[in-house]
Length: 235
Image (cartoon, rainbow, N blue to C red):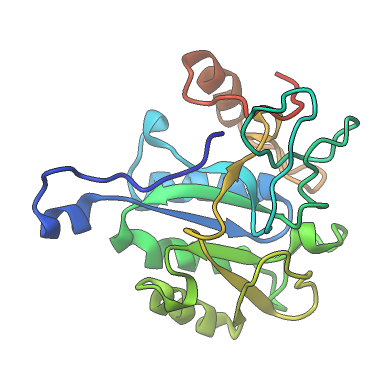
């Protein structure tokens, strides 16, 4: 299934590789539709990425388990949105909604700053109508709180006076607690969400994005840049 992996540079000088390779990270704070839009914009602004270089995808992370499609016993494990077939439901598996992307390590501080701009004045997710651990605030980065990028995350969190807590998987909701679960993305990887969730309009009424943004869903599906996941989907 499509997950986001760091890009290695075989045969490259270690110093150059450390600077130019990318790391897999993910960010969650409530509904992933708005979060994806904001991180697509961050990729364009911070990294000057063009359309074909964008990596931000809506998906799931933070759970300890994956599910199976009983009609495809040999297929890889799945993490899916709520569906009538009750296949690999992300909520039941302990995952939360996130946006995963690949970024250069040197840009992580900038993306962490953008992440905390998504919280409201009280240090919480804006869409409080969404209840439950599926909408908890969480960040995934290589090494988690023991990794080399945690100091950048903490610096951005401290500005907003938001507490960072080590996630253990299947963690609880953060609503009203002014906190974020921090996950090791090498232990708790990102699982891409269904095609129909990608480049979606926002959660709130009137939160409609430009047509060229929404159109990335069909454009990337046709080109093969965006693939299906094996979950029930509508494309």
